[in-house]
Image (tube, rainbow, N blue to C red):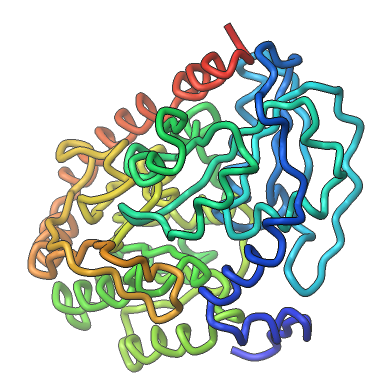
Length: 406
C-alpha cells in the first residue's frame, strides 16, 4: 500500500484519539452554533431539505442519498445541502441553493459534528423550520455527550429499532425508527464479472465488505478470517474476498488485517475504490456474504446483498435484525460482552456488544458452501424479506407524523 496522502491538517487532526476529537469539536461549537425555534411550525411548508455528506462514500452519505431518492416516490419536493466538504481542520462548503422558507430539515449529521456543521451553514437556515436529525448508532447506549446535541433538533430518526431504542432516552417520545428505503431502488450491478475482479470462476466465493472508518473491532473482519480458515483451510475451491474501504486512513488497522491473511493463498484483499454499480457487481459475484459484526446500526452491505438474492451469514444481533430472520439469513449466535474499542469511538460505560460464536460460523460456512440449493433458497428468502421490510412505507409514516405528507 503506497501513494496514499492526507491533507496535513487532516493528518494532524487524526493523530488525536477519536473520542477526544469528538468531544473537542462538540464542546467548542455546541454553545455558539445557531439553534432552531423552540417550537417547530405546526404546519410545515411543502418539501424536505436533506442535509448530509451527499457526495462522500460513507454510511452517513449513503443514508442521506437514500432519503433524498425516496422523496419523489412520495410526491415530496426535495432540496439538498451537501456537507461533504466540511471536515474539522479544513474543507469548503458549496453554497446551498435557494430553499423556500418553512421547508423542514432532515439532518444526516451525527451529534459530534452537528453543531460544527450548523455553524458553517447560513445562520438563518434553522429559522422557522421543523428540524429532524437521523442519527446512526451501533450500541444499546449512546455517549453521554450526545444529550447536548438535542438542543438543535425537534425530533430524531434512527435506521433501526435497535438504534431507536438507544436514542429514546435523549428525546423521549420523539424518536422514530425509519429504516433506509433500499427496496425502492434495489442495487443495480454493472456488467463486471468474476474475471474482472480476479476471482476464480469455479470457487465458492465468500465476501466480507467493510470500511475501516467504521471500526475494525466492531466490523470484526478478523473473526470472519478465522472462521473462513477454520472452515476451509487452504482449499483452492473456496475463496475469501475482503473488500476494504479507507485503508489509507487507518494504516495500522489495515496492517493487522494483512497480517491475518499473510501467506494464505485463498484470501484476496481488494482496496480499490469502485463506483456503486461496480461495488454491487462484486457483491453479485459472491456466493455468500459474511458479516460477523459485533454490532450494527443498520447493516447496509448485508441488506444490499439480500436485495440481490445473495445469501447472507450474519451475527444475529443489533440493527440488521429489522430485516433478517432465521428463514431469510443464516444467523450466528453470540455472547454479549463489554464493548471495547481501541479508538475510543465505542467506549461507552456499561455498553455491550456481541461476540459471534466461532463454531457456529464455521459450520454455517461449510454447510452453505457445500449446498448450492440451500444458497438459492436462502438468497430468494432474503430478497423477499428485504424487499418487504425496506420499502417506502416506514418513511411515509415518519413524514406523515411530521405533517409533511398525508
